Image 1 (cartoon, rainbow over the protein chains, first blue to last red):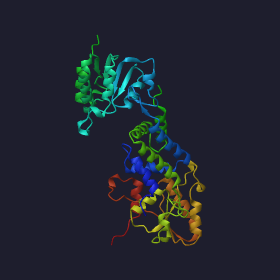
Image 2 (image 1 turned 90 degrees about the horizontal axis):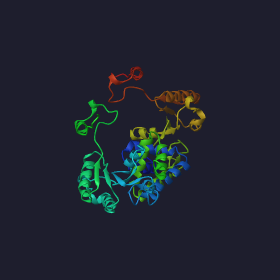
Image 3 (image 1 turned 90 degrees about the vertical axis):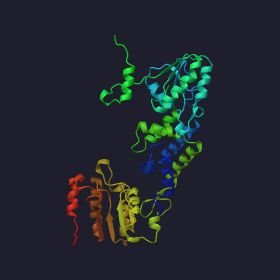
Image 4 (image 1 turned 45 degrees about the vertical axis):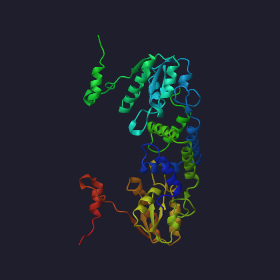
Length: 200
Length: 200
């Protein structure tokens, strides 16, 4: 006998294509689906297709959106002169959860990475530059990740944007709130010390 | 803004219904799907529906199958007088991987559990008894899990089958191969000692 019957194996193979799902987990998830009702399975299938067909990128900020413009770009309460540049739509969600940022976003959908053959043309840099060239931007906050790729991308963008005379800033590095100095790595500690602020 | 756009949230909610997938993982998986091609998403959706519509239970052994009889029951090389009773189709796969068992199976689809309101009528005991009543069965191997529920189910079945005069056996408990005595719990060790075999 084939170890797994074909429809089960096929479903497990699809689960395996998801990041971080190995062969065993994929099979476990496929077995979970067998316990779904047929209606639930159909709902799941519809949700999968809808995620691809109903989600597009916002024409302005490139964030995921259900219409030509995302809800942030559509909002009239946001400060259009500030653009926060992030790598990923998940970063937008994280910043929105903070409820403290009132500017707009720009989602690059990646970071520069020569190792993975991702150059400036593979991420949404052209679209960012078009927004800056339009002239209404006063500040660009570079909020790419604090990884090697994220830092490199921020440095690349800073150099690219500099000639336009807009303010360019980079989010701070430091000890995370609730974090213990003892468990903080040296580079973070150095950045935290370098970035120390006056208390008097 | 709603924290997540609706189609994404909907897909994440479906992933969350899978065992062992929490809110954060569900969202991560939904984001993975956004990176799929539309064709891949459709393939995934089809696989989900096929898993529900193309998989049924084998009329004889209740294992998952793509036809009225599963490949084990259809095979002419199996010993039809031995039935190995397991809780779950995954147990069948595990035993088949061993390539050493030549009898048939019976999948209960669960174990007795008063705590979870699972009684004899909720699992495939009736179907097992019908096979035993048919009269061609010589041995029933009770291979339910070594959990409280699995043991209780095995004991219940042993008592139920006893009047039919067929041989009833239970898989052995003991130290797993490659296992270290130091890390083996006391109950397992006791069972391993009780089940010791002669070496001369």
